[in-house]
Image (tube, rainbow, N blue to C red; front, side, top):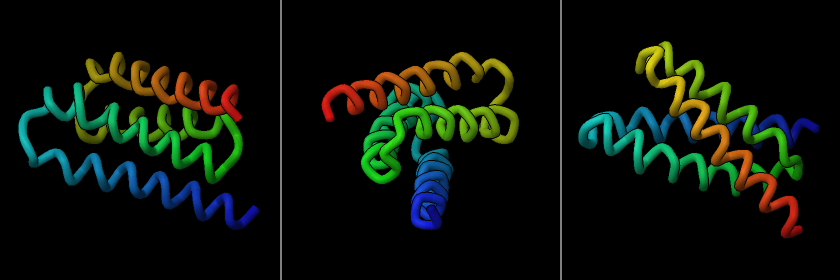
Length: 99
């Protein structure tokens, strides 16, 4: 149980750090359209392999991007929050079916 909590925290920290590091590398359009979905894809795959639960990573993805919507972006970012959560959900369910 403790191992799962530590792994989840590492994934969360990694996602936030990667997004914050990329904020200075170009405009927000590239970040929102290309970098964030790639980070969500990789984090969801790693998270599912470590946590073995299909619903954890979509919840973590939604939580992180929902907080980032108010801290970094604005309310118009909510459509991207939903999009990233759907991407994470689809990847999680796909990995669950392929197991």
